[in-house]
Image (cartoon, rainbow, N blue to C red; front, side, top):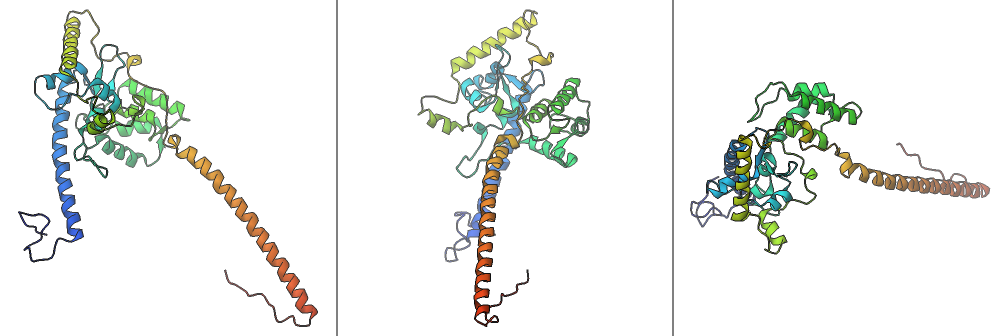
Length: 340
């Protein structure tokens, strides 16, 4: 369809009929689609900057380096306060004195969504969903043997990971541990496998935020309004400078061999939780149990009522038939036959 260049809500000349509801819907979809394409370009640029700051290729950016972009005016992003990052479930504080931002968690966070409204938000595309779709299509089951999963996942590729590849030994062992906790198979929609996918694809798959925060993530505006404008989502210049200076000291000490500013090599230090949470455990299974008991109880009551009504009707029928036979008119009442 064509619209007036001056007024997108007007079709053709002013004398013609106004835009129909269907046409308005198509126009709105085109506008939001344009937002999505713009947002995707910005998301890819943001991801590229984050990957450049990831010194150890582990899907994390140390907080001091994260703030360097904002301090030097190189980006409008990368300025969230530690408190807001923690609220979003994007801050890894497992290593004392070396807090880091988890790349996919901040990339997919609500703070980076455009056109937030009560109906929809335009956010960065979740590349992990694409990977999980490929895993689900290949496995075609809610759970799988660890060896089958290793074969599938090792053949996957992403923007930052080239496949096929040989997965590290510690990931193989982790997958066996997950299977051992779940009767020999790995549930695809459990929190443990989500953690495992994060370490297999640290730049695409987010670390389960439920392990880092129990709060419902809020957008920047929601956060400010929630705290009655007493708190900002952005870190102060002093906070950013302090953390940036601390990082410089750590790097200097590391270069002199005085501190352990190094990549995770001991897997005991990796942020990992053995607490499983399956899709059924998040309320569906428990809710089904309560609902099932209610339905079963109602079904039993209905069955008893139906049986009682049937017996009552049969009793009345026999009584009426006996009465008519005693009067010599048994043909007046005959039950109707129904085909079922």
